Length: 618
Image (cartoon, rainbow, N blue to C red; front, side, top):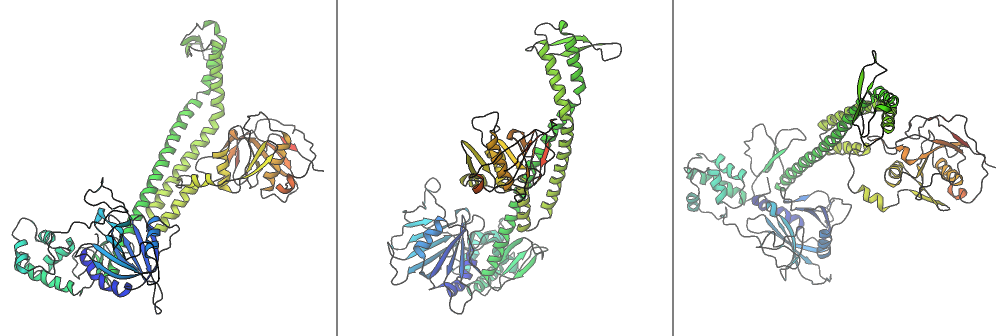
């Protein structure tokens, strides 16, 4: 429920006692619709009194808070308020009639000179979707600024823009409950009418919300009698006028995270299975209710965002699995492709020009039956045969890799199920934030603005060897950035073999087929220096073209796999010594040169290389 006029009416004396004639010390804007004002405390007070003003569409409110909130960045509206209200005394807090409108008048202290000096009005309009916080020059009635700007395209009656004259909202035509007479009440409220009595009260009486209107009916001795309703109404309004209320908050249950249903100014509560928490002041009741309601909404919003992220990732994994199943089906036909290629190669004379298929005897089957081999009309018979051999080789190579990737996708789907269970059990914002951090670390969620921030700062060290640039990552995130964002497929990549350390790139903008060995050696020495083996005498450093380096999806930052690597053995040197001295190199190839399987690098982990360079320093 939104804050009601009677709650504001009951809180005003407490606010005046706490805040009147105190200078404003600071302003903090905690959200796009909410500000907190901090006032100077007295000598006998431990904390500065703080007033929160919110123009939230669903939770617009005003109440005192215990601590001044900490914010990382200042906002424009907070700066405007601080400029005009800093060290100004709050001379008056008033409610406009029984509307949900507060007017806070600030007067500059004697001796403090400002441009366009004079009193300032901070007006809080708490009216649902039209809620706003507006700073007005009390002398000229001109708007200085507002937390939410409204132009004529939104509201032709009243523009809320800097420099415009402040026009108050239209006055309500409902009757003031403290001035309402018995005759006026009986003429407006008739229980015999089709409309419910509480709805008639709600439409007639200013400041009443549905809960208060129902309270009048519930307290009446005879709810179907208008006179009895008047007696209940007059007793209740007299109690509110004297502010002789016992405020409370109604919850669904007594659980710590139970949703708050409403705050009340009376003791009568008729919600079934509800837990009632009574508070010392109406201010405490309003603060308790709205803080709980906003916390529940924040939990639901965070849970929905994480659920959507898991849904998106799960769909991606399922698409990947479906594609792998298709690839596995193709890989299972490897022998068929080989047979087609062999038969086609032995029967080239049977293929006519631009034929879409050819019928040939199958020498690999018993009784040599004839089979039809599909052809590509745009290719020659020899090219068709080579195409089948190429499919065969690809299918044979991919069979083992496809099986591994299918196993990985099934494992990843299991992770998704585990995270869904964690999401279901998470009942606090801290638990959801922890889960969000895990998903960010997994790469399933990308933090907003992170890419832009990374682009602004150079996420790597840069060294120059002649015309060649060497880039070195400084941590896992920067290593990932180098591999996934910076590197081109013609660049050379280096990393200490089976040792945690930095990724090193040699930029190759001219797309040369080979990198000069002196450049390779210095890059390898950098990779060795920026690894955990920096104090060793000889460090193995793998290198390969970046196009053979893969960042598997869903793995930790900086984790890569790579193939077709070679290894240099170097002595680590710091950049200061490396780029200022010389070295003598003797190299030899390792006797074996068979292709190596795909290698995995997790925190520096790698396999045995296919070839090596040995480097001797003198």
